[in-house]
Length: 375
Ligand SMILES: *[C@@H]1O[C@H](CO)[C@@H](O)[C@H](O)[C@H]1NC(C)=O
Ligand SMILES: *[C@@H]1O[C@H](CO)[C@@H](O)[C@H](O)[C@H]1NC(C)=O
Ligand SMILES: *[C@@H]1O[C@H](CO)[C@@H](O)[C@H](O)[C@H]1NC(C)=O
Ligand SMILES: *[C@@H]1O[C@H](CO)[C@@H](O)[C@H](O)[C@H]1NC(C)=O
Ligand SMILES: *[C@@H]1O[C@H](CO)[C@@H](O)[C@H](O)[C@H]1NC(C)=O
Ligand SMILES: *[C@@H]1O[C@H](CO)[C@@H](O)[C@H](O)[C@H]1NC(C)=O
Ligand SMILES: *[C@@H]1O[C@H](CO)[C@@H](O)[C@H](O)[C@H]1NC(C)=O
Image 1 (cartoon, rainbow, N blue to C red):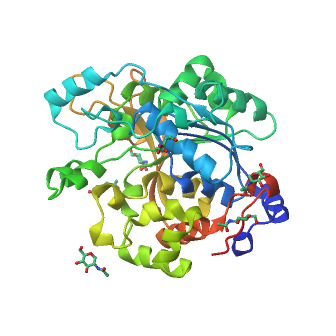
Image 2 (image 1 turned 90 degrees about the vertical axis):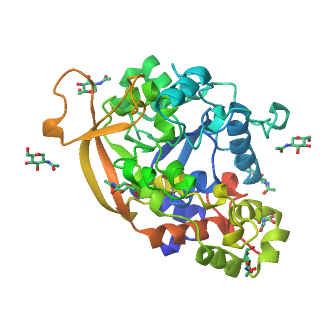
Image 3 (image 1 turned 90 degrees about the horizontal axis):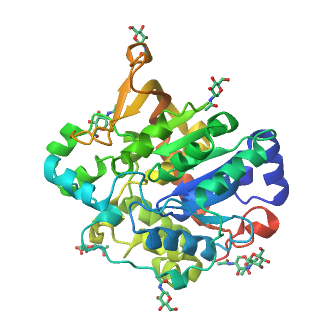
């Protein structure tokens, strides 16, 4: 893959003949590499939508919009507003459920007193078509030639909306990759010394919209990849920061180069021990995007049947239940077949993280790949 590190149009095209995917991204927010990894691997992003979840709608859309603008990708990656609220769950039922079954560390866009960072005035690059419709359109456009892959790293709402309108979508796509679906994390959370450990062992993507998650995970995909626990094992560190700093040729270079502003926000002060909780979070969604883009980094996985608890009066409302498929409910509640990713090549991931951030993506729409970043 080294030859593609500084991809040119011809190498991208060559790769595309072999294994290129067409990908639709929906997330509650975004980070640059979630979008850039597929491009770096020679895939095509046919649509992007930002939906409510870990942030208010305007913030989730705002951060994605800023990334699309900063990397100059708006002319070739259609950007949409996805689901604006969960299917059934509301702020009030979310708070009531917490009263019944225990407070969540992370409440995302439903954090009491949440204050927006972005305003709609700042967001100028969204397409009028809602995310779910754009997704359906993309599925229909490529179903006969090159069925798309869906990457869903936030709540299931947008994909659930699309499935409700157009159920045959599952048979007209190559598959679905999701972030969320932790298993066996109770004890880790219960014995955590720090609330951040409780946070990272809480399945917030599923919990904020359990009904959507259940609809999506059991819809009958050709392939369903779940990135739960494994994504928690790839975390930032001082060693990683040092590699970023060394490649740039000094922390001051990162600070002084506007193009590297997203690297700067990843590194904070460059001193890991000065991080806040947000800067120590695992590379959750990015890990899923990475193994979707480069499947060779998947080392171990398990085939299981899955469903999401949708009983409101349950401490597991919005949690994933997994079964050996021979022992899954034969009728009754609907289950889906899934591949849980158990182990990935961590070094491969960190290598791609550095490589991808240190390429210049601003010409992508024109030349079909990154150009060399000159610092
Ligand atoms: C939004 O735009 C205003 C006015 O241009 C600016 O002051 C503010 O910093 C922007 N906010 C963000 C989050 O970009
Ligand atoms: C998908 O195709 C399978 C096999 O033909 C069929 O059984 C199933 O009903 C289809 N699903 C939908 C939602 O159309
Ligand atoms: C999931 O994560 C928890 C907490 O780290 C761990 O105790 C458990 O063994 C993991 N389970 C699987 C199946 O990976
Ligand atoms: C990193 O931050 C810690 C805590 O503020 C401080 O004690 C340490 O000296 C800093 N290290 C460097 C290399 O600046
Ligand atoms: C499921 O359970 C059966 C025994 O009931 C066993 O033979 C099979 O290997 C199990 N499947 C998996 C994937 O572990
Ligand atoms: C942004 O992308 C367009 C192609 O869509 C290109 O013409 C333009 O030069 C790029 N701008 C920058 C600043 O790289
Ligand atoms: C990215 O590439 C374009 C086109 O070569 C160039 O104009 C721009 O200065 C580059 N940006 C950086 C940060 O290297």
